[in-house]
Length: 409
Length: 204
Image 1 (cartoon, chains in turn blue, green):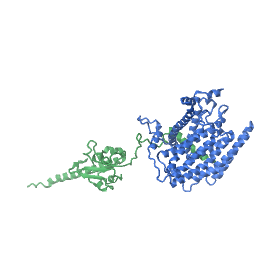
Image 2: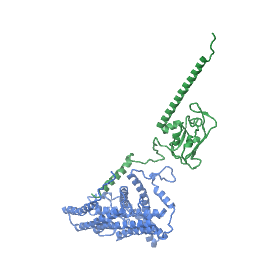
Image 3: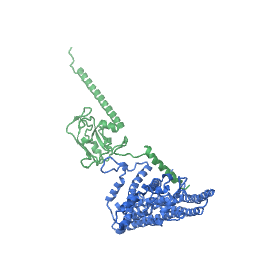
Image 4: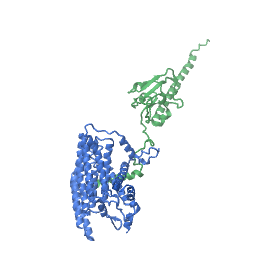
C-alpha cells in the first residue's frame, strides 16, 4: 500500500518521534505529563512565533495593498545596516509593549481587570487543542471536538465583557456591550455554517472530518467540502462570521481605531493591551485553522501526487493562505455600522445558513444518485442556495443600493 | 448582484499589491534619510545673509546694518548692532556693516517680512530644514558667521528669484555708474568751463 508507506515517511513521523524520544527520558509515572507538556510547549512555540510573524506580514501586506512600503527599518541590534526587510519588527514591538507602563484605573475592579486579558488569551489558546495539524499531530483527540472548539471560543466573549465591566468606565462598558451584541449575533451563523459538515460526516471529531475529505477524483480534484454546492456557501458564511468573531475589519467595531477610543480596551495599557491583541490573532488563527480543517481538507494534499510533502506543511500552507485572505479583506473593505452589522447577521447570514443546512440534508438523501442524476443533484443543490441568495440580496439592498449622493458628484 | 462590489474591491487591492512590486510610479513613500524629495522653488524656512564673496564672508556682507528688518520683525527675533567704522561694499562705496547680527530660530516664524523690507537684498530665505540640535539656546541662535552664505548658494536654492535680484542690482549699479559718470562729466565740464570763465582777460 503506497498510502501506508507515505504515512510512515520520516518527515511525517519526525515530530512524534522527537516527542517520544524526549518522553522516554522521564520516569514511567511522569511520562503522560511530559507527553502533554511537550505538546503544549510545541503549540505555544509554533503559534507564538506564527503570531509574531503574522503581525509583520499583516503590516507589510496591508501596506502593499495600499501602495506603501510597510515597516522595513527595524534591524538586528548587533549588526549595523542589516535590516532583513524589517523582519525583527515584532520583537521590537514586544519589547516596547513590555516596557510600557501598566496603568490600572483607581476605581477599577483590580482582580477582574487583571483576569480579563489572561482569560481571553487562555481561551483562545485552548481552541488549538482540537485542531488536527497533521496526520498524526492533534494535541487532544476528542469525540466532540467541534463542540469543545465553539465552547472555548465563546468563552472569550465573557472576557471581553469582563474587560469592559471591570474598567469602571462607561465607554468601556458600552463598547463591551456592543462587542457582545456583535459576537453573539455572529456566533449563530458561525455554528450554523458548520452544521452541514456535521450532518454529512455525522461526526464531531475534527480528525474524522478531515479523513472524510480524503481522496481525489482523477487524482487532482480533491474531495474537500468547499467544492460541494452546500460546502461553498457554508465556507463563505463561515468566513464572514469568523471575521466578525475575531473582531477584524470590516467588523472591527468593538475597537474601531479611528472612531472609538479603544472600545473595551480603553483602560488597558502596556502588556495587557498587547495580550488582547495577541488573543485576537490567536482567535483568528484558530478559526482559520478550523476553516481549513472543515472546508479545505485540513492536512490533505490538494493533488495526489503531492502527498510526499508532510501533512503538517499542507496544513500550515492552507492556514497562511486563509490569513493572507483575511488580511486582503482587511485592506479592502470599509467598516460596517453596528446596525448594518447586526442586519447582515440576522437578516442575511442566518436565513442562508439555515437553508444551507436543508441543502446538506438534501445532499445526504440523494447520496445514491449517480450518472446523469448526479448533474440534477448538483443543479438542485445549487438552486437551493443561489436563488434565495439572489432574492435575499435584492430585497435587502432595495432602497439602499445603488446609492446616490445628493451633494457629491 | 449582492457581493459583486466586494469582489471589485478585492480586485482593486490585488492590482495595488501586484503593481507595488513592479511599478515604482504607484509608490508614494520616500525613504527619507536615504532619499530626499526636491523641495519646491518657493519653499522657505529661516532667513540667511547674503555675502558677495565666499572666500571672505564677513568682509563682503550685503547687509549695511540699517536695522529695518530688526524693527519690522513681528516676533522680534533679529538682533543687530551697527559697526563703529565703515567698509567699502561691492560697489566700493563706504558703508556700515553689522558688528552683531543674530536670528533666534526658535522664535522666528518664517514670515519673510525681513526679506520683503530689506532695501539691499541682503537677507533671503533658506531651505535648510535639518536643524535639529541638542541645545536649544546656543544652537538655535544663529550668529553672523552661521547666517552668512554666498550669493552662489542663493542661486542654487532659489534660481529664478536670485537671477531677478542680481539683474536688478546690476541695473541699479549701472544706473548709479551712469549717473556718477554724468555727474563726473558735468563736474569735469564745469571744471573745464571754469578756467575759460575765470582767467583774467588779457589786456590789449
